[in-house]
Length: 459
Image (cartoon, rainbow, N blue to C red; front, side, top):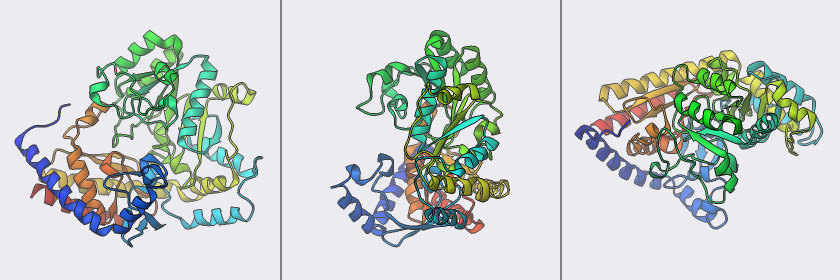
């Protein structure tokens, strides 16, 4: 895929830059409190934020209150939240059932460092949904992928792992490779180089990570043929969600499953982002794939820090026998177990999930109609309760395709929506989420704001 250079697209990009310049001024006028708070915080926190993901240009809004589908910043601006913790809040903010579960557990303690009854119950709820036999709890998606990789290495006795170019699997050294590499440094598109995403990585991380393009079975097979006796696992998002939403080609996931089995390599599906937002049983279930290990976090906790990883009994046996260490003081603590049980058992039922997906499809249809009416070089993508607008005329299949999308149009879209009370993932790198608390009015407001942006851009 190459970036369009026709005069009509050039005119759109020029107009997008004008819109961005105008809207940045509006943003700063609306958010002086956030700007001041960011300046104060920068003297105490690097970049002024507790996580680098929480910083975005021109500065992040500082939230004071959230409930249902709304967040309110320190300046009193109200936003309909479609970011929702980068996909963590399928239950929405402070769902009444969720809040009651937290309050009830507070009366009984927050940390035992010995098992609680809910551990077994929540494990059962996950096993009912996802294709694994045994599960262990963690505190984040990063921990889930880190521990799954260790379990895979313990089971296979091999060290190297394969990951897809452009994919994010947490911030431990072994996967902080080729996350958003500059194309000029990333080498051949068919055989990408392993590019560090950060300084400070272990040299063994770069040595032990092999990078392949997503949706390229030929490249994967070549890598497995050359290095298969050294590779423990291929870790991938079944649906890549660090670049908007990148869907697997027809047959790709089954092809991965077949190739990894043939070469004695484990398949780890990172469902931290897809989780229960893509399907009641995750993207693995949606696509009918049986990975060896599945990683979870974000949406299964409803807003508290909880993760999990599960797998086939024979793979998880390493942990059961004590040969593979999996540790953590806060793992499966009763507070997050109460929250996760409420989400999985009581809040995100099949019926309400289907309703959220229906609202998402309605929003996507409205956006698609505006795109088609204006003839924009863009398209929409759906994955369960998540959706996005991607600024390229053709679907994105790989990281290199994603790098050819138009980021000027995407940023103008984002800042326009923010100034009209629609909170989207910064820069549109991620995807929006429709929670079980979103209403038809929320969808209409989002669609109307997007229609206004398209009119301003095309007019």
